[in-house]
Image (cartoon, rainbow, N blue to C red; front, top):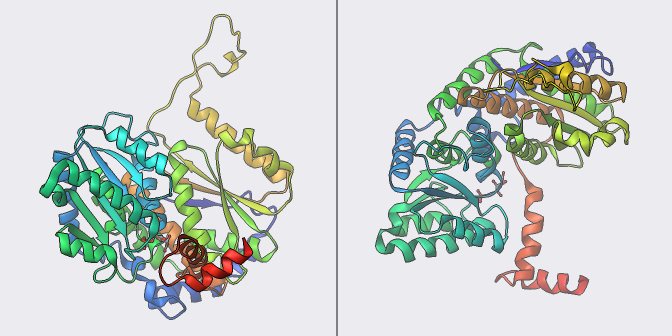
Length: 444
Ligand code: PA5
């Protein structure tokens, strides 16, 4: 298992015995995830997904990605939340945060839409596509989410204007097996379709067609990613002890929560983690933030945010723990050369690599934050390969399942997500929301 957890900067605040004392609860949660005996057990398809997936569909995904590479300069991926973040996280992590700017080696550019309601951004993407060939992968499990539905309507019209009756050959729909408006459209128009499994929730769906098609189309090795996830699954599900990294991480954050911490900051020292943090925030926030419980997940890009939020972490209200993520071996580094005049005073670093400086910054910051009263967890991942991405995804998923059960909540539902939708529909005048609209108008 290549994700490792180091708690040496956590123990000054919470002795190892406190984590060890949770072993019984963790064993119960571990069994419940494998046996499906607790709340949310109809959404545990992700537990075995790295090995138990539709192999024929996987081949169709590879074929669709090859076709998109062949006939499209751009793939527009339309989806929001769990139908968006995992794919973007994987592309940024395994390819680059600048994935559309570097040499694409024949792979299409990928633009993400339907993850906001910004007309100007839709127009910008349309102008960036210009006259070039494009395809669409529209992803929505429910098939009825407003943001992707609007973006899909706009982009589909554009596709039809450009390709006429051949447009439908360029639309790939990832949705429910049987229900929803997108499923009906896909059936009526004959879009090539992929399934979001019934028992896999949005935020746990990156290893399903939801993530696989955009990732493969962007050039990520999805076979290696699934192998990484499968190996992580084997290691994590077999180890019922505190040496299991998912147990160690879940135990540490549970102890901190029970002892009064309110926020967990994920701080990442390479820009390629940026959207991994966004994915992580959804995974942990939507899984645990309910019944008035849970650590609020926040994120920092480091060292960037040390020059903005660093002050608060060092010195502000003591409500947080910090989980630091680092890549042991970046894909490349830069050697700092000696300068004749040493005008910038950096000659003391001559010969050092930027990675060395980054690692010293990590160590120094962790010690400073520990001195400032912030318990630190360190997560290391060997590299930014697709294999390691698969391992990291499975690690975080299993750990949040354990941690959610330790909180005694259902980690696999998201009842709170509906509240804003009802108000928005009422204000927009959607049929069926007349009474709520009248109520809201009185308040406004
Ligand atoms: O995790 C979730 O359930 C949500 O974030 C959904 O993924 C998001 O709301 C998109 O839903 P859908 O895929 O149904 O369009």
